[in-house]
Length: 221
Image (cartoon, rainbow, N blue to C red; front, side, top):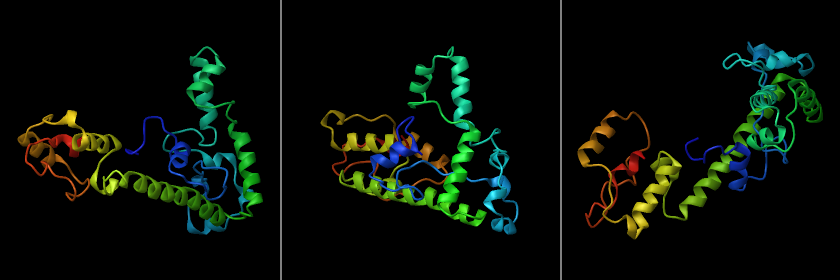
């Protein structure tokens, strides 16, 4: 996402914007997982969760198993860092070793059982809730937080968090008066090459007194 700081996790972003629920688990704001390899046709939605195997979580796009990915990254950094576990955990922002894929799979089975998720249809519905509800709440909190700064609808008017900050600085900082980076011809050239993006509403190349203090680069920062 272009509206999050570097290395900001989904959990951190959701907590920042006051999301209290993780959908399937009120104490867990992590993204859910789904066994895509177990679902190849519509009738598979009736498949019992008891028939699901660890291999059904293999990721055909990136390779490896999605349940084993955290431990695999931990193991890779351990080898690279000379088995300095404290440093590796600090890099990964963890307090303890991540679970192996088989350990995660056992916990996932327990989760399905506790939530009475008996079929793939049940698992898919739970997965969708864990994905969409917290993200929707987080986006609402994000828009509300930045609207108080007079920046309008952030997702409609800006391309990134950096651009929002730059626009706010150019609009409100006296030190930014007379500072601009690009001429109008180059601005038009950039615009002509852009496909999609936010609408024109709310973004002006120049401010009201025509002193060109609003940088023409603000829209494409």
